[in-house]
Length: 388
Image (cartoon, rainbow, N blue to C red):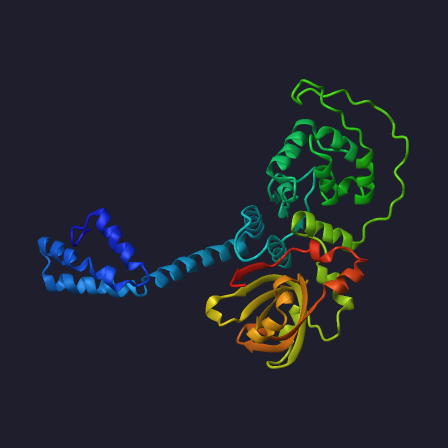
């Protein structure tokens, strides 16, 4: 525009041509107009032609250059925030889901390993979204599946209007939520400070909820009768760590408590190496690792190679799955939430990978340890990228 007198439309047309997969023909279509306009502004034709050659040359690498610069800046800013404000960074990421490469559960585990305290969802303390509570991050009520944004805001508004909930029966009477959503609220652990989950679910089943007065559109409600319960809550067994952990994952997509691999570690074969001990092994050694599948990538440019990310209670492990191994174990690679991988340990500088030779599902073992609980349906599925 400054050198050749291009209009805004012409300049935009040239910009589009430069970004259109290096379309030389589309770029050259503007050369004559560019040189003509530059000449009218007192620039000799040879100089104008040289400038246009540089524009055409830049189109061949300008996009990756600008993309790299923008991504580098974003990576630096994100790393700075993650280091100096780890709690705020985690809360912001959790509130921006779904996004990016890592699922919410992995973001929480990463923050915990770096010293960030993450507090579970709580009906009397959580905001609708994730927020700071002192230096800790409190999971928001919106993370409870089936509650959603409207239900989470309704809980917060009722709590702010009439004070905290002192029991599950009062909770049921004060909140205009369906019984199934109240059950999820209790089963997700949001009411753990009011009692043990099984006990609370029993009490919830006995809770009297006043019906709305007919003809009022749900605005007027009948009076609640103050009647003592006819039967006391029986002494029910507490949920096991597996039951609580799986309920957390199933109902909120994340768990701030025990990692599945920590519960499974004692039952794994002795050859399985924790992620924090990988660096103790030499390059080329046959090794076994186990973990929760976090992400799977099968880029079109990788000639069929699949890259996987496993997570155990100590960190993450990069897996490289060659095409023959992928074809042989395709159902496990694509669908299993818990896997054991055997292969060759590779080290290149600071990079550590396992070149996988075979896979094994850990779901049957986990299900047996968890007394038949639905492990497969409770643990979060890995993120998929690229070709399946």
